[in-house]
Amino acid sequence: MGKQTTLEERFGKCPYATAQTLISGKWAVLILLYLEEGPIRFNELLRKMPKMTHATLSVQLKALEDYGLIRRVQYEAIPPRVEYSLTEIGQKFHSVVAAMETWGNEYIALMQGKADA
Image 1 (cartoon, helix red, strand yellow):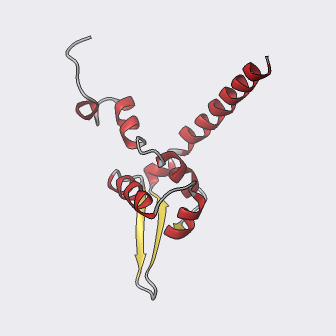
Image 2 (spheres, rainbow, N blue to C red):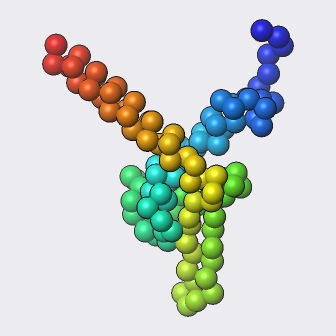
């Protein structure tokens, strides 16, 4: 198969390694899912996340922003207001989320069937 490479070396060259890197954050998929509903403020997003700290959400949002999947808009108001939304490429992640939902539901049903057996 050729010489072995790291995930970092494959980023931007291999579609699977690239996608894995982009959504590698523990909460990345949930954040992208919630942002599908439209722009959302930081604290509102934090309330939706299960047991997430302020610092963790900040790090995850910064990473997704650096990757170009989300947009951060700061409004000059008192108090300052920040909203997050999906970029055009971030919106295209919807089909991936939908496929994950379908697969996840099938897996849950399979596991529940094993538990009932």
